Image 1 (cartoon, one colour):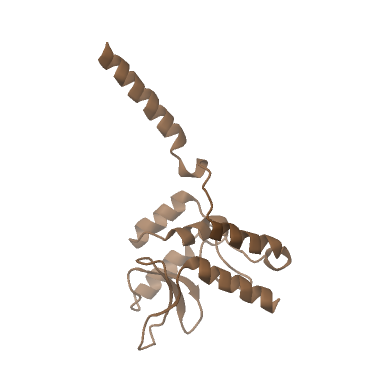
Image 2 (cartoon, rainbow, N blue to C red):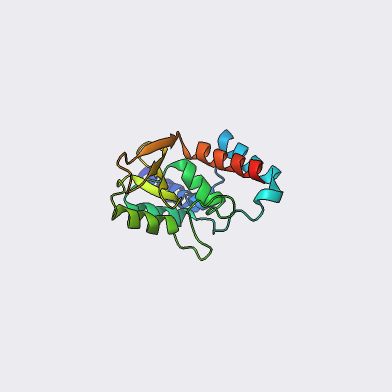
Length: 173
C-alpha cells in the first residue's frame, strides 16, 4: 500500500513537471544589463522602432542551432536572439531572418571553411572582417581570413558590444 502511494506521488509530480518544464512557458528573469539595453531601445523608439528586421528566435530554434554548430551559445546572445532576432538598420547583427532562417549558423559554417575557429559564431559581417562571439569565453572578437594576426578581442561580452552599437546609432541619428 505504501509502495502504491509513493508511485502515485511520483506520477503526480512528473505530470506537474511536464506541465511546467517548457522553457517558453516560464517567465525568464531578466538581468540588469538586459533591462538596461531594452530601456535604451524603448527610450529611443524613433531610432530603433524599425531597426530589428529579423524574427525572434524560439528556444527550440536556438537549441537546434547549438546542435548544428556543436557549441553552446552564450546567454547574452541567446537573449538578443529571443528579444530582437537580428539587427538591420543601424547595425547588421546576424541572427534569424524574417522567414526564420538561422543566418548566423549559415555564415558561421561558411567562414569555418575559411579557417574560422570552431568555437566562434559569426554575428556581424563588416566586409573585410567579421565580428564573432567566442563561445568558450563569451567575448566578442574581430576575425578575418586575410589578417595574419587573426583574432582580436574587442568587447568582454555581447552586452557591451550591443550597448556600443546602440550608443553609436544614437550619436549618428
